Amino acid sequence: MLHLNSTCRYFYYNGTADFRKGAYGLSGLVRSEMQQDVLSGDVFIFIGRRGNKIKLLQWDSDGFALYEKDWSRALLKDLPPAITIIFASPHSNYNLFCRV
Image (cartoon, rainbow, N blue to C red):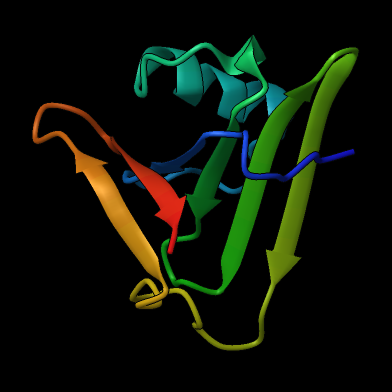
């Protein structure tokens, strides 16, 4: 089960993720491309290339929790203004989000 709260850090994967991948495939992206510890309890956000799918991945003490949502049209092509990117490195494929 996902535990989303203000103490979690949220990382957005800025590349194109293959949405056929499950928790273990996405955790490989977190380790290799985002260079983050997937077992930290942080939440990793992946958005489909067409902007109509989102996946959230989090390690929950005894296994991965993976949430997936599909929309009929692209809602996430451009990020909503309520979300602000507070860290963006030109040398990495992720951005850290915070809630405004």
